[in-house]
Amino acid sequence: MSSKRLKRLNVPREALERLTQHNIGSCRGVLSRSTLELLKLTGCGYLTVTDIIDQCCHSCIPPAVTALQLWRGRSESRSAFLPTTLPDLDMVLHGGLPVGTITEIAGPSGCGKTQFSIMLSVLSAMSEGSHSAVIYIDTEGAFSAERLVEVARSKFPTHFQNERDIVDLANRVYVDSIQSCSSLMKRLKSLEEDIITKKVKLIVVDSIASLVRKEFSTSIGQNLTDRTNFLSQEAAILKYVAEVFSIPIVVTNQITTRYGRPDAVGDCDNDGSSSVTAEGDGGYVTAALGNTWSHSVNTRLILQYLDADRRQVLVAKSPVAPFTSFTYTVQKQGIVQEDDGAGHYHGTDPSMQHIRVRSSLPIQASQV
Image 1 (tube, rainbow, N blue to C red):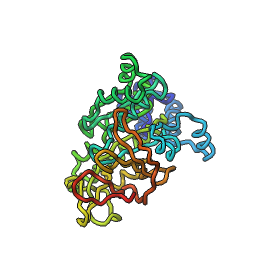
Image 2 (cartoon, rainbow, N blue to C red):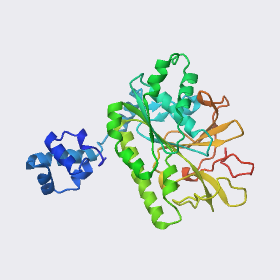
Image 3 (cartoon, helix red, strand yellow):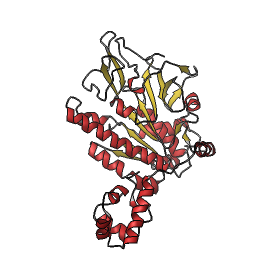
Image 4 (cartoon, one colour):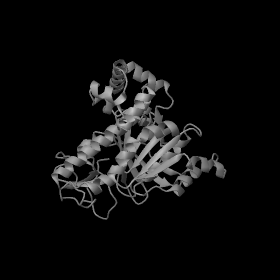
């Protein structure tokens, strides 16, 4: 909450301009200065400065609410969830991906993480007619505008009958190609203004692991500490944005191989090893970025392979849904659920969930 921008508070214009000149643009910047310093920086009187401080303090403290208020708010709101159009998945999640939270989609390469993200972008951009937008942060160069158009036309053929409707949809999906962790952090800190001006209803980060695993080596102690701090700061910003603007945030995650006992999982992952482990070698495949990050997401969906054509989505972590699995295929209209009903599996800590990957070797997979 301390990262809330001063522009969103009732700060006098002159004081705001002078604070901005001194690179103070958030509540954290104000509260880290003494009253005397703020008097000098703003050139305002004592009462005005104390009023600014009070506003920042109140903005950093989440208001207390009752469970009844939260329940009624969710029940009365039509936009409390972003439906995925996978019927059984939406049912167990009580409506779809919950707004105000972070949903992670983890899985091996080629399993449909980006396809899922593109389909959700189409669904969100259409959720409120022509008034909502999507910010798609692409760190792997995997986003395809052609695929976005194909999903839209295949999934909603009656709606997208002319070129104008397709152009309007594509014009409301803003794609940021990010190549470094510093650029990613800078972009996340600048999201607020775009969310307000562009009426953004969904933010996608595809993927959350790509840049971190490239720039931070887990074999060096200080790098591991820096990586954990970066991920914690990243999660804090995303949670803040999701909660304040009541929008869903979707992040994709890669997989990694861990060795040793499944119950002895730390914060590091073996980025340099193979994604596939044979039975008996003491390793297993799970979501990357370690235990700290797994606790930062509210909902974790794991995608894994069943066979050459079919995949499976596992609800590995959710505050409302049980451990459940669904079969799906990737088609022209995006992710399509197969009519084999929902299945239950023996769940575990989401940071230790085993994932099936495509390989000719036998692997240690999740219990489904």
